[in-house]
Amino acid sequence: MDTGFIDHGKIYDCLKNTAAPELSELKEILEHARGLKGISFEEAERLLMVEDRDHLELVFETANFVKEEIYGKRLVLFAPLYVSNMCKNECLYCAFKRSNTMIPRRTLTQAEIKREVEALVSQGHKRVLLVSGEGLGRSALDFTLETINTIYSVKVGKGEIRRINVNIAALEVEDFKRLKDAKIGTYQLFQETYHYDTYKKMHEAGPKSDYLYHLTAMDRAMEAGIDDVGVGILFGLEDYRFEIMAMLQHIRHLEERFGFGVHTISVPRIEPATGSDLSLNPPYPVDDLAFKKILAVLRITVPYTGMILSTRENAQMRKEALSMGISQISAGSRTNPGGYSEDRSLEQFSLGDHRSLDEVIKDIASMGYVPSFCTGCYRLGRTGADFMDLAKPGLIKHYCLPNALTTFAEYLVNYGSAETQIEGWKLIEKMVSDIPGDDIKQKTRENLELAKKGVTDLYV
Ligand code: SAM
Ligand code: SF4
Image 1 (tube, rainbow, N blue to C red):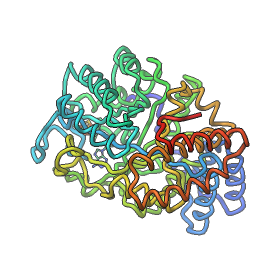
Image 2 (image 1 turned 60 degrees about the vertical axis):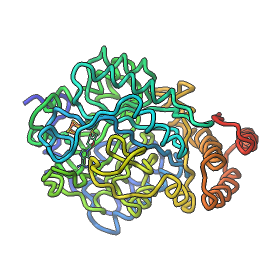
Image 3 (image 1 turned 30 degrees about the horizontal axis):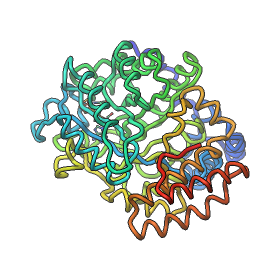
């Protein structure tokens, strides 16, 4: 069994021999975390062992502190765009698996994709996550590249999609280069489980069943020059502590090899999926408390890595997760190809949050969070190591909050319902005074005035 850079023996030792810290040690680790430079992976392993409710509260408070200090109140929004549910893999947890006859199979045409994107842009979305099964054989990448072109070409009024993140099967370096040339944002691929035997059990057939090929996908993506990559774990397949320790090994490996780590971490929990018995009874279900611990430990350990929560979580958990360090969420999502412009049946898995984008935004704003549609960094070339250089000294706040406010204003002017506008402008007024630095504050006020007059795509 070749597990590459994931040292299973070391993780087993760690699970056996690591104890939760005593209160005094815990406080030391959390004090370290408040320095905003991350904590050692050994410290993270100790935190993963904490079970005591009072001690967990301290971990949550610290995660909240780190999140507020680095990201402030901004929250990036996106919509997943499912373009095909054809798949030759046999991932036991997924409705798209090859053997599932309970869902109709479909790959959208470019005209249908255009309609989907028009529906998203008309709601106010600026970022999409392009998602597809692995069913299109040799022409799959050509289809993806054509799809990216189609998405970028759609204009509705003053709106368009400005960043496309991509969640598709692992590729070879040459193909990753083509994907990079198509101007994608982040390339995302979830390992699902880092545990070799569990991985083999969960992925019965198809190219994805090759553990090592899947594990090394990010190496190939980064070799190809894609410097924003996003990893993820599907929680419920294995002991979450094993998974986090392994994911930290993955991140360390990429940091050592390329000089910078991953751009985002996604944290899906298994949801019931049509035709998947496993999804109804996952072997290691993660309860809400453990899930919050996972989020908090990740926020504290890798504070500059974005964390993405999907619509799979219900509104209450999303609320709690925001305080724990989530920096991006999907909103108004559909997980079936055609779901935005057509009907909503037969989704990939059941969604926990059925609210529209506008409802999610109103709710977020009333909680004091600023919904952001900003794509400035990526378009100014602030990606990979450059993004980390910017992020590490705490500058995210200086750029991101002003840009979040102007893109939010753009949303309100063009798409916001009357109620959301009231909530939104109240929040913008309050937040603009919190911008550090007079120059940027002044520039933001100017941009807000321009946004009110209908000027779009403003960023610093
Ligand atoms: N086919 C590509 C792949 O597997 O990497 C990308 C698309 S796949 C639909 C995207 C993600 O959906 C998977 O990585 C998996 O984590 C997630 N997923 C699959 N079944 C799920 C379920 N029942 N509940 C929650 N997430 C699920
Ligand atoms: Fe196919 Fe991805 Fe679903 Fe696996 S998770 S069956 S590869 S769509």
